[in-house]
Image 1 (cartoon, rainbow, N blue to C red):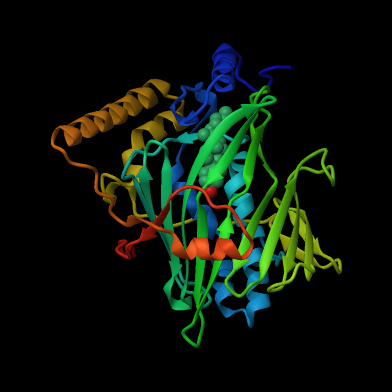
Image 2: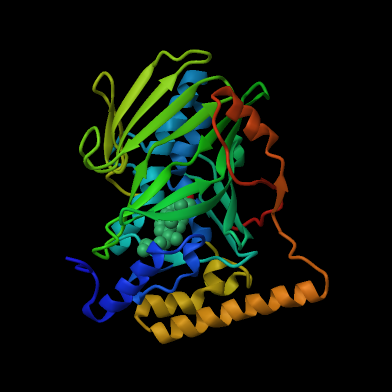
Length: 385
Ligand code: CLR
């Protein structure tokens, strides 16, 4: 039944919202949605999903050769074999199903303002080194979020940006992701190995019932400068395995199309390699990022900026949430007006737009298509203790 998962009092507003999405093209974030579907978390926090397994991120740097490094990048991307005493999470599970885990369904995140920042870190434990995150909202129309994650002691970093183009088809929201990420490792001989990571296409299903969830579709790629390539094919219920969140990853060596490793499974739980060994298992815990206490954060830092909106959403005080949200949006509009009157433009703090030469070089190896602008980190993030 339509709106089954929607609180009775919000059904008509949900129906109106769904109708609006169906006839809308462009930036979904600007549509007003009923309260039950709102998340108190801004999109600037999402890049943290890349490193909620900081041990796996660090492990890439210590893998023994090109082939093992490709497999460890893939394992960090999809997840890792379960050990009872370790935390388990993959970038995919974090990015695409964690709101279902924590809030019961996919939700509408807060739409970041231009210049919004998110800083945090995962502490050094068991010699894995400290991992730090710097995020900046580098564009508002269209929304683009740039991020830089690094573990200096392991000489490994991830730099990328994320934007989305949305459309509506067959009752689902289709999200084409723009942008990509580049993972860089400095090897012991000082040489660099880089990995271009492209982003999958999303389909948001379950809209009609008011319980949206993400299904990944088509393929994404990880291209190493060593020549190793991982092709990850996604499918959902009713496709080749019939199970939700299914994937099949194929790893090919440099200059060859003959598949050397095949990994198959469900990215939110487990998978096996072609010999039947468990490749990953993410049914356990993750490790949340540590951020400064809200009252010590700067005025552009996400949790401080959205503090009262988030409080309103969490506590069901939607008047507070919407008054505060309007206040922030009006303040932004005024700021843009003042800037154009003064002939000025907003200055980014940690990133500059770049030509993405390195990304395009990697993309050419497997003829991958890249979309969206590329941003480069300036190396000037704060040190948070
Ligand atoms: C942002 C980049 C992350 C992965 C990711 C996960 C969920 C996506 C989000 C991205 C972009 C915004 C998104 C969201 C799911 C729902 C939300 C598409 C790609 C839209 C704007 C909200 C639609 C409202 C429904 C929930 C009804 O690495």
